[in-house]
Length: 394
View (cartoon, rainbow, N blue to C red):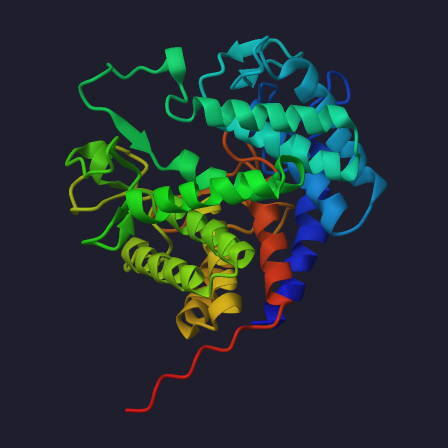
């Protein structure tokens, strides 16, 4: 597996990051363009706050973890200035989107804007220890926690009381966010917070009969036999499992890592398209038709996060199944998503693995999943691999 580390490193530093450095910076109004075509041309100037935050985080993280390159810090500060000035309302809730000049387009209904803003300012504070960034990250995290039981608030379309469901995405991201902000929140806060999010992810949303993670459950954690309740998002579940693996390292709990590997492998086996290869976007736990018409598309982030999960699973447990699956997912991902002619990677394939949209960035795809996964796989596979415990003799 170590042979992959250099490949992922070179792809990150020589192909993907240079694309965003070259094409995404808005020199006139601040912040980043993310709607970029195959060649890096801007095809729309709207700015989506969660992608602004993700790009600030990415360049801050690279500056902190790889090399203190001035151009990386400059990119992070450039995005942070725009995010700080225009990104939130008077209550500190971050909007979903702005126009190029920074005027709000979509109200702060989406709490993931806040999550990635907190991540961004937290990472930037490590790179540039200005207390403004510290305080922004801390306040935003506290605001997320205060809103987490009703994240959309007045912007929710759901009628109250009839079918009250809670969604997996927020507990999942809080696993990662709490570790990202430990240098700001302090270990005591994180130590209290971790058991809550682990219990949510590994027990409340876990469907014992199928061994899979659900996207939505009733408020009391029970199964809802509805479109929403039967919904599986294999990419979400697998990404969450590498967040849990990171928490297992933080807690020195190898059993937790083993359980995360087990769930990830079960999800991958369930979600893999046996006919054409790749991982389905959405599925139904009972095999019923799903609402999402894009259910059989193959998305970049699903496959990139799976590679991270398998690399970490192998490194932490020595699982041969993780190694075998990594080889298989690596081959599919690099063959179908990587653009062989121009920089960066495609995001959207049809079921057969053909490119659906030749864009390199848009409303949902930005400078995040591809470079983060390349970084994570590179760094993970440089570490020594755990030796699995020998089975007792019969």
